[in-house]
Every structure is written in structure tokens, then in C-alpha cells.
Length: 54
View 1 (cartoon, helix red, strand yellow):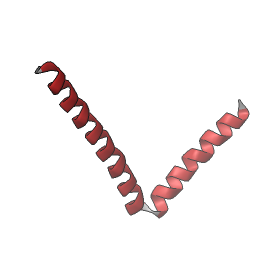
View 2 (tube, rainbow, N blue to C red):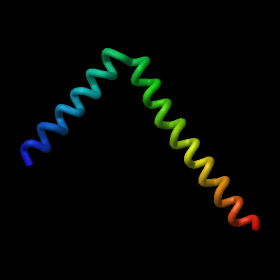
View 3 (cartoon, rainbow, N blue to C red):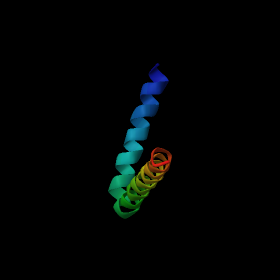
């Protein structure tokens, strides 16, 4: 249990450090994640429209 807590804090510290030292790259990574979610949702909507309109 202690190892999990240490790894969690280390991961949080890394994210904060990354955001502080590379804000443009971090913004690009977040933008990429949201673009992927948006694309997946769009494809899912297209699928359900195709299923329901037949």
C-alpha cells in the first residue's frame, strides 16, 4: 500500500513538473486527447445514426 502511495505522488509530481517546464507540449498533449475523444464520439454517433435510420 505504501508503494502505491509513493508512485501516485511521484506521478503527480512529474505531471506538475512537465506542465511547468513544457507548457506548450502539455497543451498539445491535452488537445490531442480531447481530439481523440471528439473523433470517437463522432464515429459512435455516425454508427448509431446508421443503425437507427434503417
